[in-house]
Image (cartoon, rainbow, N blue to C red; front, side, top):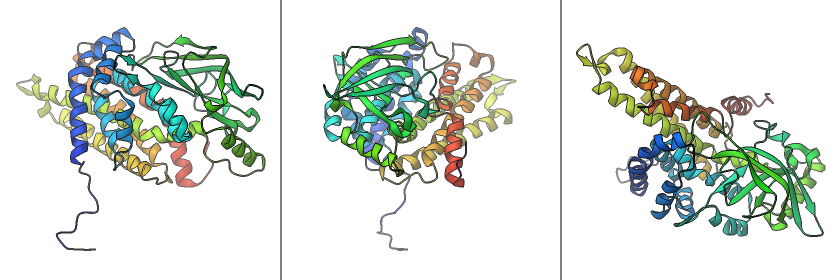
Length: 411
């Protein structure tokens, strides 16, 4: 180990100047545009199109921004940006980043030509904002991705795939410009016979089903997507037919099939989802801390009471620990390092549960005020719960981690 003072450090948790600038820029938008609209759009339970338009005008809601942050050299571009957005408001922020899951599905599994053709229509441009949607879950296939019933049948005569089925819990479902749908091409092979398909704008047979009225993240549109004889060109099979045929052949020969499309998409997205949870938790902590410093009872700020101060200490410590797990997972993913011990799931598990606990503690610190809609912490608590449910429940994350650390097929 060199002791030369001129030798640069090989390890640092300090963000680069560029990343600090991005963090500040995103934070300003979150503070000045997103947070002031949080309560209104939560009550309206509608996609906040005016805020998406404002974000598009400054380049925050754009393919270019998300691509640049995905390619940031340390891998921390997306987690840092997402934490700030969700610090502002989780429902509005999810409307801003919801298209990225569909984009990740194409980037992670698609061809360069598919990436170039289909990612821009997921975001649109100022004055013509568009959305993307990733459709995986079904009424009878949530955590059990192998139980997907949506079918994909290849029509060789027309070189088209025909999709039939119903998807549920779809962010931007039915209102998106481009939908990416996970379906079973070879149902008898279970999860190994599944593939993802791009449904272009305006294709007949795709419609929105039920729109869900949710406990939290209510500014984000969540709905069913019904597919009735939806025909898409052969080139819309993500990754291409040749790759699918090779994978199916390996499975039939008893060889490994490689990573399944939906699972690969979820794994790639976990550090980003975990960063969202960290942003919500941080918002609640900061609000509760400031409240505790200002609120006077028995002649002194309530922050001077050990019960409150210790709670704030636990909140801050758990948030920082969660962020470190997120940064590690994001750094590993960017560097192509495998999650041998389920580091992505660790970040998602801890961050989601920290968000729920910290937002509940924030309500407790505010007392009766925290339970009213006059203060944002009750909304943040409602928003936080989703992070222990979507993109893999906490129980599924524990199962994945358990399998990784024991080598056993835990179920």
